[in-house]
Image 1: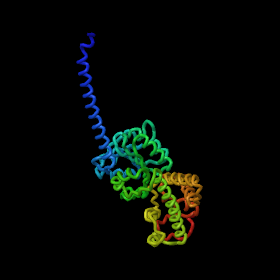
Image 2: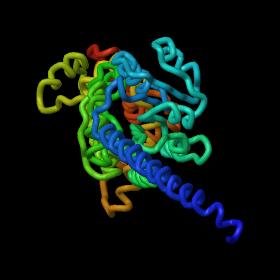
Image 3: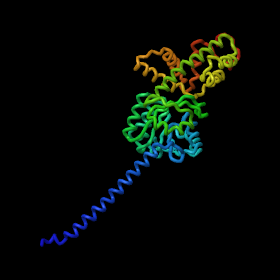
Image 4: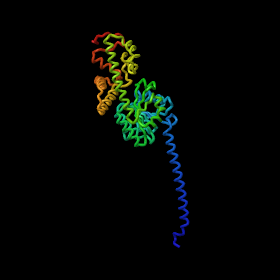
Length: 357
């Protein structure tokens, strides 16, 4: 008998035993994996709530500050980042947590919101390879960009998020600072329908959500909204200049037209502010110039001529040229005052029709 054959019975027994062990491990692994996927599927279809969703927020300016406060008051755990830490202090006082980068925000969140200034800012805070939110987001996480930005960038972010096992939604808003404070914003969303449905409980804390279609469609809707607002603001300010030159009481004039066909949200939000010379920004001239510039580029791509949009963009650009880019969009009246050498400085009283000189 060969020496090694003495161990043959023991070897056969070990092989049989190891087979049982590996079979048991394989069965257990399959069970755990199945349970994991089943749990993930249940979580994916479950609506968001403070008990199952951690939120992150990037950008706490005029709009973001109020929007974040609604989420905190609703009981959500919120982690925030903004370029100017002092702007985050009111939210930290309410219980928000500070993070030192968008990536850190995302690493501590299931859903990350951003509302920043320009498309370049959006790209940086979301897609930067080492500090961007997407680099820190776990698979299954969601990015919601509420900045008014390029539709093509929204599509790019959606594609990058999908490749990373995550989701992305473009959700720009309309309603200004008052809408943010009162949670009455209009929220235009583009992306995957089930994801937006999942986020509805969060959106409901900020305003009313409208699902507009595929990635980028939320941004297209917001740009069309800005085109409408731009021409409406020109009409509002031109009407005031005309009424002033005609010697009308401007407060009485606004009251008279507000309930007729000339009534508008722009009149309600900005008419009295203009008469009070209140040009504080609910929405910055600089950001509106950015929005209208995106609109004009998209018009060029579409071979579309919108002369009213072009005129409004030029008037707002003139405000920037005068160093008035950090004023609110109602400051458009200043450009028209300069064109006509008049000033609505009587706070709405009958000002006569003379020039300011």
